[in-house]
Image (cartoon, rainbow, N blue to C red; front, side, top):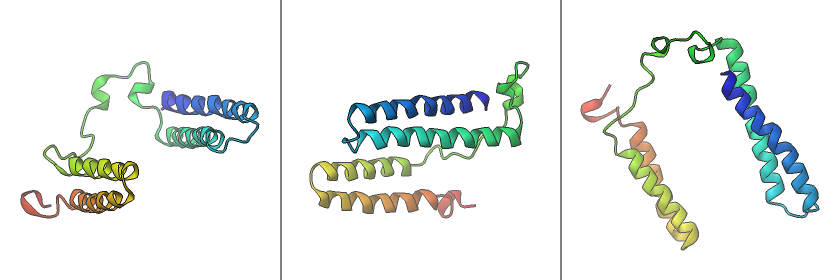
Length: 133
């Protein structure tokens, strides 16, 4: 996790001075860009410190070592649903929700309702039917 930690802490170290310089250049009168850039730095620092703490407790992974082999990182990665339609429904609900922000706010309610249905369907996908556990 050395590479990931360095990447996120490097992003934080880059955006912190960039945000401060941006604030000085705009006279701290622009209330969207300056806080947004600082939040990018803060959130990247959060992720970087989390990865650093996790790396200390987990130890070096095969991809962190020079003598690491491919077979050391093999095995089950997770449980994925290859035939699930719920992610597509959730993406459509998000698209409808964002369309509502552009067209009319009432459309956002339709997208939110569809998103609730899609999330419930995705969470409980393996609780009913042929694939029940």
